[in-house]
Length: 66
Image (cartoon, rainbow, N blue to C red; front, side):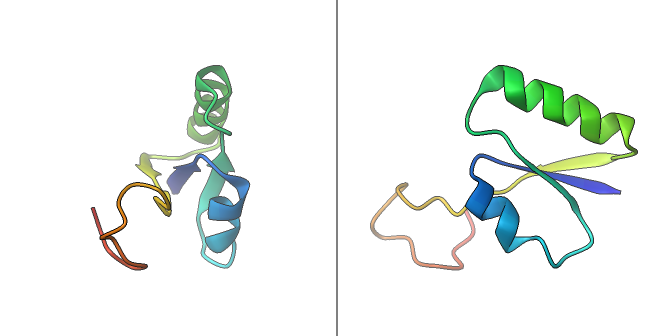
């Protein structure tokens, strides 16, 4: 199972229809660690960080991969 970690709840919602275990951390390190540990305990064999990167650069457009 693939686990996906996001910073925002809205980012996790974007992935809701996919067969992925998603958690949002709110940008809090302790919360992130707790939720990642839970993903692993529930069977995640890989983790991906996902975000929409809304404020990274004005040159980036929706769908750009960085």
